[in-house]
Amino acid sequence: MSKVAANDLSVFRPGLLNGQVALITGGGTGIGLGISELLAELGAHVVIASRRPANHEAAVEAIRARGHAASSVALDVRDQAAVQSVVQNVATTHGRIDLLVNNAAGNFYAPSATLSPNAWKAVVEIDLYGTFYCSQAVHSVMKAQGGGRIVSTSMTLHYRGWPLMAHATAAKAGVDALTRTLAVEWAPDRIRVNAIAPGPIPTEGVRKAFAPPADSGAPDLFAAAEEKMAEYARTGIPLGRWGTPRDIANMVAFLASPAGDWITGAIFVVDGGEWLAKAPS
Ligand code: COA
Image (cartoon, rainbow, N blue to C red; front, side, top):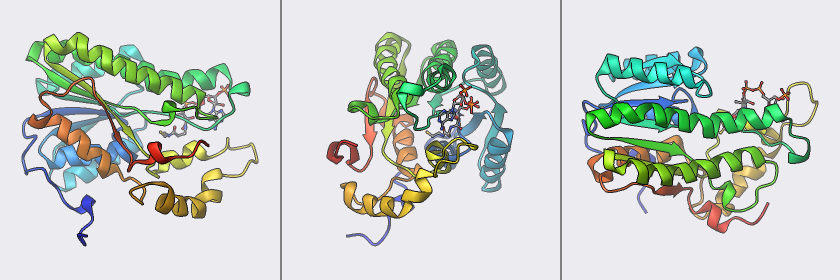
């Protein structure tokens, strides 16, 4: 076996995405940051749109410090008017939007029987409504320029029942449906619409999703389970390790490249084989 980890190698040629403009929601942290970094490394100008300026400003600074092109804008993808305005501004500033990555997502483990309407709404609005609002907003820009690509983030938990995740699994099932429908509807406009379903990637966001509400006094499931989770990665994931943001970013870069030209309506599971092998929770 190679001594070099797959994540240390790039199969993409330098400058592959030169001249492209990529809009990445939630692109300042976690998986989104990994996507922003790789697309910028490959020559795209990345525009990171996320709620918290502290997150996206630091990301832009780091990407620029490595000599790549990036900018950012504050955006809550639940706000349809704000989404429209951001997309129009990006299109006006850069003249085009080649790629939209619907990466912004929110979730937390919570029992369905007592989930508040607001908790349900928060997750469904970020994951599903946000994906639709952003996709719809880039449609006219991409159509006018002769095409474009949309890649949304899905998950695998809704392939089976997944307790404590009713809100997120329902939303991501919707993202899958949206991906297939928009792919067919917008193919005449040469807009390719695909999704990626990542397996477990222990980013800070996932840690927060496991954390109990601040004043609940309940144990932090992620911290408590960290040791068991390391063991799980070795034995429960067929390919024997956690995923990394770069694993997902590689698939996004592939779809953004000419190699993705004839791919639309596909949902790519990138999870080390986890969901197929996983015992029901
Ligand atoms: N368990 C139960 N309910 C929860 C919860 C939890 N762990 N976390 C949030 N909620 C509820 C809140 O209580 C609130 O409902 P209420 O008004 O009835 O009390 C509702 O969800 C909205 O929460 P709030 O934090 O105000 O929403 P927000 O819009 O600022 O943020 C999230 C929503 C999902 C982004 C936020 O809860 C969060 O940061 N989640 C963890 C991090 C994350 O999602 N990472 C992405 C991993 S893919």
